[in-house]
Amino acid sequence: MGNIFKSLDTENQAVTDHSDALIKAKDYDSLIVLSDYPCHDISEPIFRMGERLKGLSQEGCWWRVLSLQTGNENYIPINHVAKVYHGWLFEGVARAKAEELLLLPGNTVGSFLIRESPSQRGMYSLSVRHRTIKHYKIFRLANSWFYISPGLTFQCLEDMVSHYSDCSDGICCVLSAPCLALSSAPSSISQAPPVVMRHKFDWKKVDQSQLLDPADQNRHNMVSYGVRNSIAAYLSVAGTAVQESPRSKKCKSVYVMASQSNNMTTDDNE
Image (tube, rainbow, N blue to C red; front, top):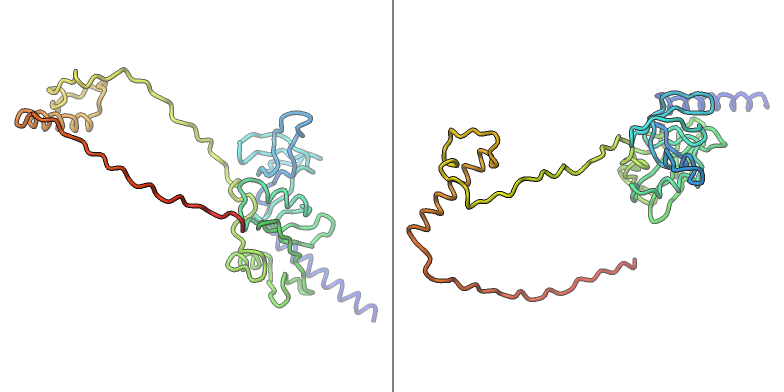
């Protein structure tokens, strides 16, 4: 009888190992920084917690990495990073670290990650950001199907994520986006356009004949071709209007004071 149970355990373990291999069938998407490196006590950090990295090579206890945010290339200890699969499966991340990551700016209600236990291989938990960080243990059947609520099983973790992305179905909220999804792509550093200083332009000295002359193709002209045509049309119409109907009387301006609107108040106490 003991041999039968031992055989069943071995078979179930083989199924579990095969299932885990399928979960990580492809290479990891990226590495994620688990803590600032180096720490603030030593110097200004090169990499910050939550930053996404591309692993270039693993050399002993170090990763040579490329930051997907800054484009900087450097080295970081292997214990400062974790592999990320499918954008949401974090390898070897503890509960407390998952909470720190989900509370970083850029994550909102519904941001989530599935973490593999650092101590128990093949054991997973779902962490979701809501009013607080909620954690759900993911159970496995003998056939390696997954479930959070009994009676609602999934053949793989991808199916579970897909289901809870459509409806909450018992968990705190619908899954909206993987943890730090907004930081997963290289960020372009946007800079303000340079300010171009031009000489003062005196509209009173505009030569209308030049504006009206379509043959004027002077590239150094202060006014573009389209704008010159618009100005020419305006000056032509304005000049005609002034000649035909000069203003002899001053117009009076009437100002109407708008009534003050009621102040809207919001109650933030929910």
